[in-house]
Length: 296
Image (cartoon, rainbow, N blue to C red; front, top):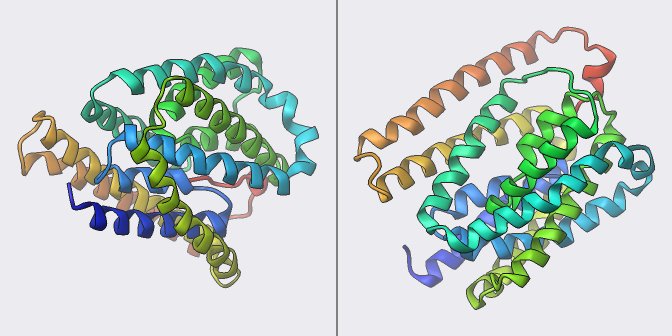
């Protein structure tokens, strides 16, 4: 682990980059921060700090998308109800499981979700309690354990045919509830240790600068291409992180563990090639496809 000064500097840069992306496209902060920061910090230190930041970020996003809440809250209610037991289970696991294995679970869970999302997987999913309750519980476990929920939410929402206003409002509502409930469970389990609280100021420094810069820069960028490149970067970082934790836990020797990263890069390069080929020769979008909005 690097010295405290070096780690703090790196964390500020990571937060700045993730906040820049979040400011540009409206989401993606934890999905980018966590895989990078886990190279230098454990989940027990990083997660509480990320959750505190996300409570405020998600409340802000919910406020600016408040007009769409009335149209979507009934559709996301099963997810919100399912979140509660899931968050409790994930938070309890975070407090008791060895940190190295938490890292391993984090990377193993999110890597296939990122690649499925990058592949543009589409399968209509009906919004119902039968789907929403178990999905919400799984999402609660994932978020409280890793602070990441973007990829599975993207897969679900993009396959329910939500229009952009509903997509953003539903996303903001779910993420506000999950971050707030997770913060409450973390507090009751005593997970807000001194190192986590001090890390909040480092993350905040990047957020304050990065979000306005991202909002300004996206006006001059192709938003769809920018999203897809960020997704690839995220996949490569997760592949690297997974390779590193396999070595740390002595589950695979170096350099063979880096085959995971190499495989991730090869798969993503193929998906990236397909994306740019389709981008150069776009086909007419159906009404449902036009309403979709990818998510980190």
